[in-house]
Amino acid sequence: MIKLLGQGGFGRTYLAEDRDKLDEKCVVKQFVPMIQGTAGLQKALELFEREARQLQQLGHHSQIPALWAYFSENNQLYLIQQYIEGETLEQILQKQGVWTEQQVKQFLESLLPVLRFIHQNKVIHRDLKPDNIMRHRNGEYVLIDFGVAKDLSATVVNTQMGTRVGSDGYAAREQMQGGEAYPASDLYSLGATCFYLLTQVPPWQLSLDDGYSWTKNWQQYLKQTLSPQLKKVLDQLLKKDIEDRYSSADQVLQNLQIIRLPQPAPQSSTLPAPQSTPRPTPSPQVSWQNATLVATLTGHSSGVYSVVLSPDSRTLASGSADKKIKLWDVRRQREIATLTGHSDYVFSVVLSPDGRTLASGSADKKIKLWDVQSQGEIATLTGHSGSVLSVALSPDGRTLASGSWDNTIKWWDLQSQRKWWDLRSQGEISTLTGHSDYIISIALSPNGRTLASGSADKKIKLWDVRSQGETATLTGHSNWVMSVALSPDGRTLASGSKDNTIKLWDVQSQEEIATLTGHSDIVYSVALSPDGRTLASGSKDNTIKLWDVQSQGEIATLTGHSNWVRSVAFSADSRMLASGSWDSTIKLWRAP
Image (cartoon, rainbow, N blue to C red; front, side, top):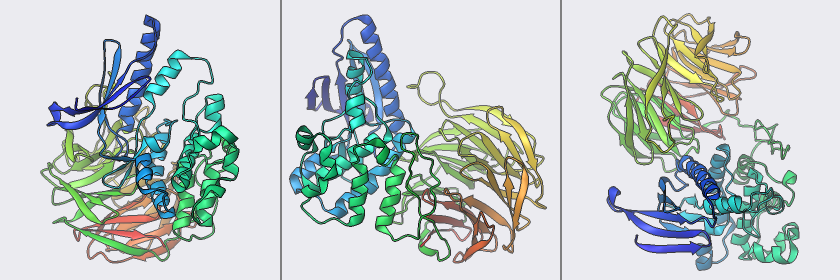
């Protein structure tokens, strides 16, 4: 232990050094449940384990402190977490004073994807406030203190419905009055935090005098002029009633995109509305008619076979014939790291839904798993007798599928099914057979229920993930199927072929919808945008084509690569496209 960082009613927090990690600094949180009796203590331990398990899951994000370990000793509970070097928003505010509009926008753009991530993992922070948000020395905002002690003690000491968890002034009304918390509750707390940064007026002081009525006239406390757009965003974040508030971080991000860049008139949103707030904000239509090249990334010494963008669109991974994987910073347009370990071409790379784990398939017949943050190798999976041409991860990141030159698809278990705190164990679950030639491409539906495979036998097969049985064979291509992709709703499948065409298929009816022609050579790669509206294709004719999925018409042709385009991938907001080419470069394209 180095020093005591803080002390409260439920324990202490220490700064320490981990001797097993070369004296790397860490945070030790000691919890002492204020309860008596064996049953109460057992309940505390169970809840602590559940909360620690959530922290381990959420720790796989660069803006959430990683959980290193947990244990109990002498009826005291301990968490060991990553130490974040930086300052809390409260500390920054006290030093610099009121924040500018631009600073608040940057803060929102950094933190909202973190909230989206935890909410997608069914976790509500419940205590979002300036003391629980830090600015790392690298400029990113980090969400800390997931309220384990508060949740733990409140639930154990008082188990009736309506137990309060949260901080006065920052917690939403439904949280303080009814004990209920939703994603929209965290968004209210985010709005209250922004208000405090812009005014330096503590929300808890206003709530003491006026309850939640201050949120109706919060603008009177401003010490600067704000744009009408930001006022509108904060207005909706601070709505007293949950049904009037934003229901998801995505909705706020969409409005912030409108703030940053003028957009065409919005159409209906593709995001489903949570039951508590059935009025989502429409997402703007993305048009690729006048796409621009924004960057060319160089560094590979041979052709680029595969590219993939992280869920937050900040990191790009590429696999190459130079036997290397490279990680790139999309914003700064520079290389972050080179991962070496494969002894032959890297045909396929894919990132886990949380962006923390990368899987790669290679001509060396191996699959490797990598930790994106540390850039270290986690495991090597062996079992295929031929090159691994394609890999895909399940939405929960627990299983991996691989397609190979040996004509098989294999399923792999990436997580131990024993105790959650055990080290990950990797093992083959099953092998799917049915194709009579190479498996060139595989894709999983976003709900993880359907697997599609494209083969050199000119066929596409659909598989039920749960039963691992074949459900359909789609025929129509006259040559190898080089690439398959599934739409966000899982209803449409796109395939690119050595016959120079792209086909769209109805997954439910297993019927061909359309054949898209325009490429003059092999279609190596197809990708469907996350909004489901646009299809991108990369070809041996050195071009990328963009297609309207609904009308099946060609939107645009992107030129710039001097050799085959082997891979294309969209960003999560559907506004950026990455392409990898046999010319050894990666290009980034953006919709206007």
